[in-house]
Amino acid sequence: MPYPAKPSSKQVTYEEASKTALDAKKNQDNERAKEKAKEEQKKKLAALKAEVNSVDQQLKTVKTLIDNEEFTLNQAKKAYNDYFKLAAPNGLQSELNSSEIAQLATLQNPITVSQNRLTGYKSRRTNLNNTRKDRLKQINDLVGANRKYQIDKAKSEKNSSGGPKKPPGTGSGKSTNNKGGAVNVKGQYNYNPPMVKSAYFRNGIAAQTLGQEIITAPGYESAQNSWASGKNSRGTIQMDKKFVTKVLKKKDPKGTTFTNFDDKLYGFRFSYNPTTVSMGWQIQTAMNPEFLASGDDEFVPISAGLLSSVVEFTLWLNRIEDMKLLSDQGLVYKNPYPYPRTITAKDEKELWKKGTMYDLEYLFKTLNGPHATFKSEMLQGETADRGWLRPAIVELHLGAQMRYKVRIQDFSVNHIMFNSRMVPLLSTVKLTCLRFNDSPERKGGAPVGPSSGEGKTWSGSPSPSDLQAAGYR
Image 1: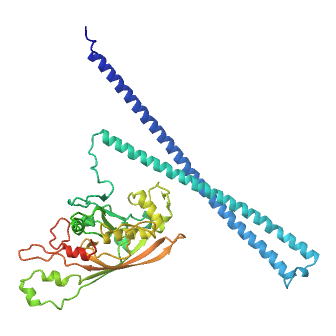
Image 2 (image 1 turned 90 degrees about the horizontal axis):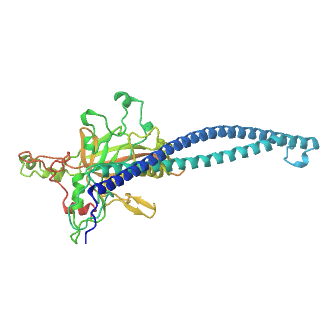
Image 3 (image 1 turned 180 degrees about the horizontal axis):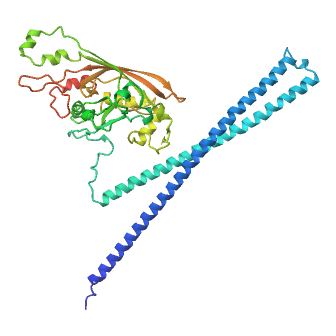
């Protein structure tokens, strides 16, 4: 019995080619449909923005009408009351004759007309505000959908090009390693978002000294790179990478590493550089100068001089301008983009919710370490403000030649301005920093103690007892 004829290779090739062509056409049609939908979204977005602008103009007109009508109403009421006082000095209706009653009725007419107009204007204002709120919601929904489309498209192009894929476990920022392995922190620092461009000072002595250059928020990955090549920059307090690494490698009694920590590095960038910085040094009377000069114990300067020098300064935090552009849905107007660099949607919403306290969240994250953030029952959300400070080692960068390893002894906040939701918009922060002895040299020049540069040897890293004293368990 003959075997069935084997399909020819030419026939299989035609089928594969046909399927490939159909798939390509289908993909092409899908892309065209997406692009068409994207163009329609752009048109709708432009129409919605135009409608919002029109509503804003109408609201201004209605506000003017309301103000004028309220003035007219007050004048009409004053005329009525003045005549009534004149006709009835004792304020009794029985004092009025028929002609005076008729005159009062005549004076009442403009009051009634004005009140009716005012009611109509206020109703119109309410409708316009509702329309504006609805259109802004539609705008935010469209912007969010467009952002998701761009992200999905980028992922698709990256996967189709065979680019490197993100290793598992690096997307959440939380580590779940509980097998006693080494724990590392990410190299790039996360800073509090900058202010809007309009909030940075453009006039005054400082601006003239800098040649009218506005110091906004440089996009460096670590404050060690600030003021590079003589460029202007802003001060920063950030985690000490070596100290944080020591904390994360510490083991609990069961021999496993911490199972819940934030593996990101955090820093607090100043909104404005401080105008004054107070620094002080103290002598150590318990130290024998002759023994110290002999060089027999090079560790004496570290132990005796620890935390005896102080750096104090006051900072301003300003989120007044931000609140004009933010809502509970995030940034309302994104063209032109108001910030010096792109901030995340989460930052936008948190700034609207917390104001200057959101800047302080980054300071609390920096000072309280990888285990700082927790869910607060009172705030009904996450915060790093535990009501107290851990004595962590942090980096203080005040200038190109003013960089120190410090411990924040205390800081106090004075909220100066709030909005109607009691969200602080303008605040001052006073910090007191205690310095660590920084890199004295042994005989032969080998460094001892904390180093001021990343990547250099720091043989003065905290011991397990130091970590326990710092509150890390």
